[in-house]
Image (tube, rainbow, N blue to C red; front, side):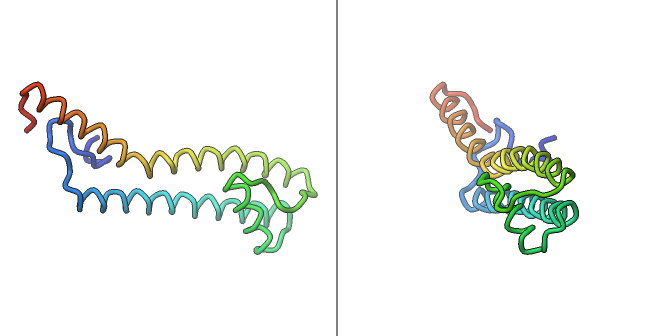
Length: 126
């Protein structure tokens, strides 16, 4: 599991700052990828269910994804159902993206305190 996530074990030293920035950049890229996919899903849904032009579909889905709310009134029942499901999905995508982006920061902070705690107790932190 550690190989998938890519975080060092608590017995390993804190990652050097340069490698940490690369990890943070990778997490931000993953977060942007999630947002891009979520935006594309919204655009396709608004275009298909509401018949919106692509630019209006982009505007509506980006406003929903950012938590601001829709720009244009919805006309069809299918579009309204899609908009509700997409709004719930957007909240989940936003939360997951924050988790991916801030996980390296939280891990580094907790790992640093773990190493400092072991050093204070005189334990070996190989």
